[in-house]
Image 1 (cartoon, one colour):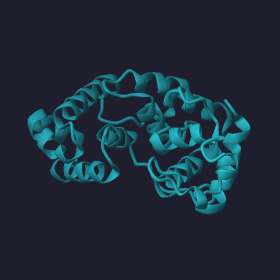
Image 2: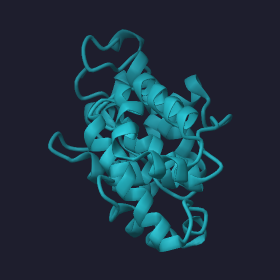
Image 3: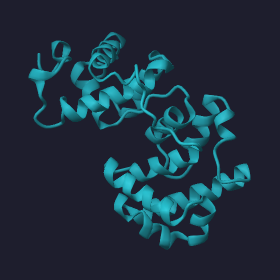
Image 4: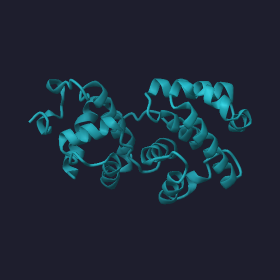
Length: 219
């Protein structure tokens, strides 16, 4: 994979979107909130995810309230996020495991561990994949991680950072191995914004793209 092109992407997009200079506030007081939000985000868009999370927290303000309500009511609460039956089951399981491991419905204790232990613990939770782990570590624990979604995967392959068959998890590990933690959050958000606005999956606006000079698709 091509490290030079990673920094080309980061540098050029920061000139436009400035999320490294002014990082967005994407974290939560307790990383557990971020974890549940990210579980809800799987296979849906941000609007549906946020609607489900808002309804969940409105109906059941605390995680003990969620456990007390049970799976069926939780499923109704998060229906707008899609796959409600599956996600509700995963959330209940995650909450039960965390309470058993830490004696509370919180991940604040885990946030004080080293990043390797954090990654290992989160990855072992039901329904939690590499992207979810990276999101929680970066947004909620301020740990070195670089989540890779469809936008980052697409742009990385188009610009030639990674070969076409490279998995998102492999791309994530590569970014994490070379990008300083100070650039991870803003850089991540910059690439996503560019993927939504310019380097779209269909009908990309190549003529308006600052990455076009090194883009394998354009050239």
